[in-house]
Length: 339
Image 1 (spheres, rainbow, N blue to C red):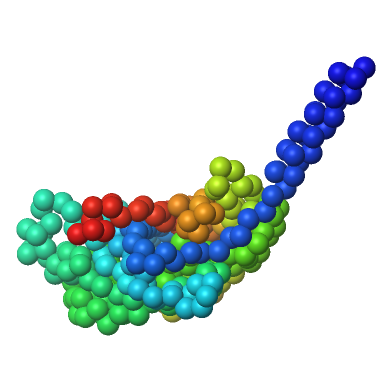
Image 2 (image 1 turned 135 degrees about the vertical axis):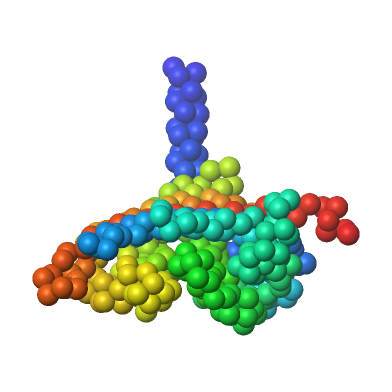
């Protein structure tokens, strides 16, 4: 009986320890190590499809990838409540495809990059992004990352491009937004996600996302984060939400109607745009000890419709849009730090 009682007591102790361990919380805040350096890779893919009879429609897909090195320049507060960062663009990849209108495809790391840049002003602008530096400020709780130094650069590189093809002009317009201050802020908001500080599994908190969705405009979504679990020092955080608004003032209006009827009619087509359904899903893997997001993945799906009357009779035009983004971090190699 005594042996059984001891065994039972040991079992209860282990059970209680397991429950306590499962319920353990963590301090979820971004950390900024002194002179810390890391590489951040941002990959965004979008798709927008709609049909406008009788002139046709558009199915536009974009994949944009950029990698930059992040350096911690300074921090504020004893608890490092915020930090000033420097970014340096290491690589750029950009692809836009619109069936029957062509495609744009460039990789700054390709052996053909310099040759392609010499022949095309859009590719030259993309290649010249490599090595560009910018600054940004971030807070430990992830609120309001602020980027400076890229809007003027993007405007100078892409704003003056005048291409005959609608797709090239559209790519230039999207790149100007993507590589400006706001475009980098969109990526940073999904890497430096809002964090609550001390949290327990099951805790939830609010946030938002903004993204350019060519040629529709900019989408604004409200999201909820939930700490699902903490395992092996990694916090797994889920993301759910919906799209609240589409700002069509930034729609891809590249050419007048006489040159490209569908694109030229976008202001009228999008005037009465209504969101029918939307969803935002994703997951963040956060290293608690390092105070750093290792990987953040999210996806947005959107269905809309608009009513358009080009010939007096109203036409209902359905839209389908998708966007996915992956932002991940990797440490800068030690030998590079010493160099």
